[in-house]
Amino acid sequence: MCLGVPGKIIEIYEQGGLLMGKIDFGGVAREVCLAYVPEAKIGDYAVVHVGFALNLLDEAEAQETLALLKEIGLFDEEFGAQTADANEEILTGGTVAGG
Image (cartoon, rainbow, N blue to C red):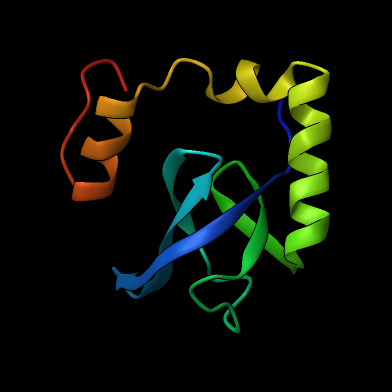
């Protein structure tokens, strides 16, 4: 199942002419295209679907949505395989075997 999942923008940069960022999804960081939300700033929350931030939302709404996804088990379905070590490698630009 593909979901639009909210996450917190922790880094913003340009790559190949595109606005990109790293987004924290409750402890799991992923690289995301921010081209659709050029007004985004570090600390903002964005709804992400298939690697694209589609819109921004406030922290309260993001936290509520994440809590609901965890409650019904869909958060773990999307991100459960990540470990703290793999997350650290993603944040520092390393590679993760199988990821």
